[in-house]
Length: 142
Image (cartoon, rainbow, N blue to C red; front, side):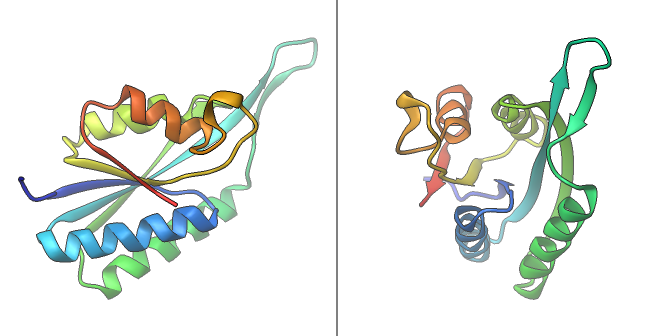
């Protein structure tokens, strides 16, 4: 098996995401790899009179999340970079897969999240979609 040299880590503000970050840190330490952090900022699109595009989370929260996660990896002497992408609400998976392709990621690391969709009760809808759309290995951390 080839070592995971480029790890794309999809992060959000969940406990599962924190565990995925720790797992990616450990994998990168073992392989001598680098980590590409990715946060997909979802937007709600309202298509009605007076509608528009509304961010689901505050920009300050996203900035703090990425800064904190970068610090965790830098403290472990891991080369890290971060990227922020935007997607319509419910379409984060396509951006995660696209980012993995763009950086030629060897693996995508992300947390599982329990959502209400019947097909994704155990994995979470975004993790479920990434698992099925990605062309590289996907490590789902519970």
